[in-house]
Image (cartoon, rainbow over all chains, first blue to last red; front, side, top):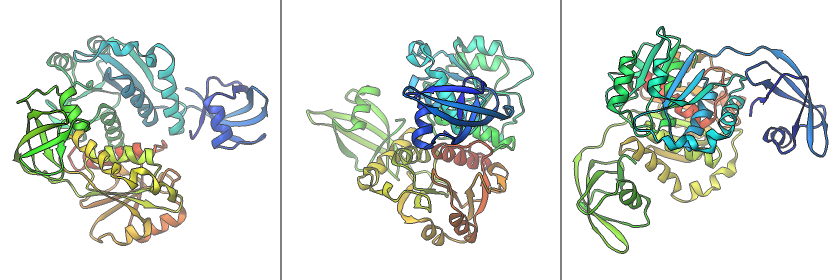
Length: 237
Length: 237
């Protein structure tokens, strides 16, 4: 954690001692009373936290908020719903690297049962986003959706957006040689790949099919590669 | 596993039933007697395996080798020795994405005790490379070293090589805007970052310092981002 994120911008807040952030402040940052640390508000300001009291149950902090939220480039991901352990990694790394939104969608070959995981039925999904942002030293986390089909998701997209789908079978150019303009939406298939029906939906809604070369990547690796290549082409990495 | 890799190119080979590859062939590929699968020789040919017998203890295969080993671009990594759990992820993903060599080095801030992990004292390190290559559908795995200092490693490098070190503090251009020519060596700091002494060693040996933008990445994420950006600039991704 390079910054510790909190839910709101109150000047005085507490954390239960059992909270992972409290443990990090005590054990990793080794804060004593009066010590300060980098703090932020989820989707809000940056600032400084001061540890002002420790009691049996909780840590007490005072905050000063000094810098406004950064803007994040409008780069959205559509991803065929993967296994929960894969989705966890993607939530973390795309939050670290800075996607604006992630739409996990039902595709022809994705397993509908994955949405019943506790990752999605509890608030676990948001914790992975926050972890990723705390690593990145940012306060903005991606918006996440996981309850729509590929068809409904792409049908609702704005028309004035660059749309790229990654497909190592039918992609006609490398992602590196594909024109990148913001706002951008990039689609990555599920672990089982796109079906012909999925490809038809994507093409009919204006997606250009690109590829990431000859090597077969895990979905979570493809997500990191894709956002890194896009951000490098935009001069950001 | 998109291809199953074997140690040698004998036409007839066996695997103990307990071997992960044997389990994959039986349980994931669901091979019966006479069924074939994509096979390869580590740092060798591609071909086809046929399951010819199953007994109490082992699986018996016949192989035909049909395609020669692919060449891998000469892109070497120097990485400040990270915690074993981080090194495992790096071994896997840099093998998937196709680095030619990985030098894990002692830096000023890296923990010398990490080399006593069973990752390095057993052959576990090579298993992560093989897993990564099996994912990528390739047979070539990176060469790996983990017993030298940063100084000794960079001192032994050839002079006619492009040398880039990633440094989010002192990097003067993004990696995406840095000239990439093969052969290439790219250095990534340990989790604690480079020291001034490390930077001095790198600069004196001709390394250009570049960065990956404003977000702080985990070392394993930085490795994937770096090789992806480099390969996209070379037209390969």
